[in-house]
Image (cartoon, rainbow, N blue to C red; front, side):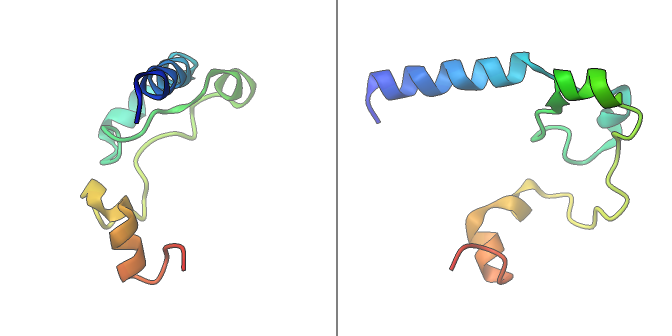
Length: 78
């Protein structure tokens, strides 16, 4: 990946992060360190009361979301 692509991706990621929010309940969720939160406009519209720990969270390891892990469970792209 060249410099321009790296810079473009970094700016895109910054703007996404800047325009997202989390609730205080998010700190209890095991995905807090890999989740960016919800869009700020969504939070204004719907609020953040529904956010928090996933009650069905059985796999606390973020590798759960890796493509090779999804493929091993038959959930990834074919």
